[in-house]
Image (cartoon, rainbow, N blue to C red; front, side, top):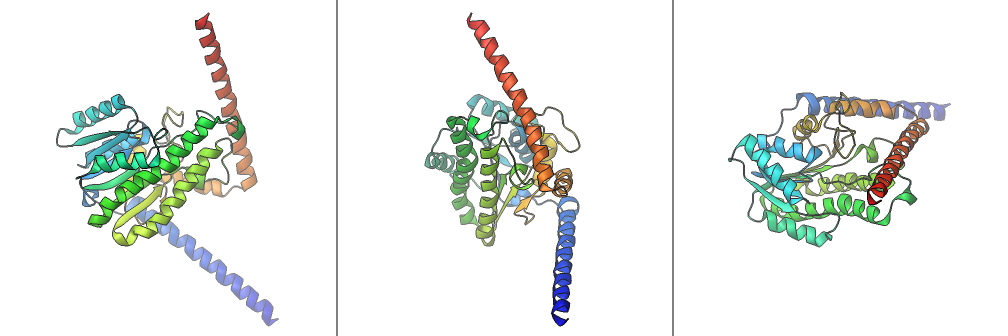
Length: 322
């Protein structure tokens, strides 16, 4: 009888602890998203570096950083798009914003070459913020055996090696002055769902980014460096093949404002855009088997449309040759 009483007491205690943890997490989330005053980002330094800065989230984040008076180091693979983005930022915010550009094709350069290019590009700058935004996914959903070897290698190089080596390159600068902020853009594919079929390699690389961020956040917190992995779900970008924004699918501009708001919030993993957090909570309430089935059916539809588009493009090319 006494043994059963102890079991019940232990179960009740664990349940209470779990409930208290959930309540505390909710209060922290409300504080960070709605009540916490945003940090003055210039306290980290006068320069910010953004990878993948010519499209989507990266471009919008660059504009948002410039609006706060930060100078920019823009990193991308296309020199003309880098020049266009730089000119657009200067046209909007004036010549008081200094901009440097670094041309890097993360899918082709080896890790040490990436690190060397970044170190040379930021030499002498008061670099305070790094936004590791560069990312690569398949053009459309595919079974693992259908993904060609070049695509697999490119996804791994861009998403894993790019994030790792750029971070490695900027850390000495931040350690020297004992302040800085690093934001790695992750993906809901790695933490928000139980699986992500037909985008296997992409999801696995983003899981690496999440764990990488959590670990180095603990390593460098005592050195004054705030590191976090921000998790977007769907955003209306070219990479996501979504043109129209909505409540659950923000525009890059809307997402970027939320992204900068949570920098320095002491959360290793976070969803800056609060409707994404709501969406994630709803998905977590579903049984894993049901969620997996829904995602698999959805991505099978995407695969079918992608194959049809490829087939049509092939026919058009053949007709032009004839």
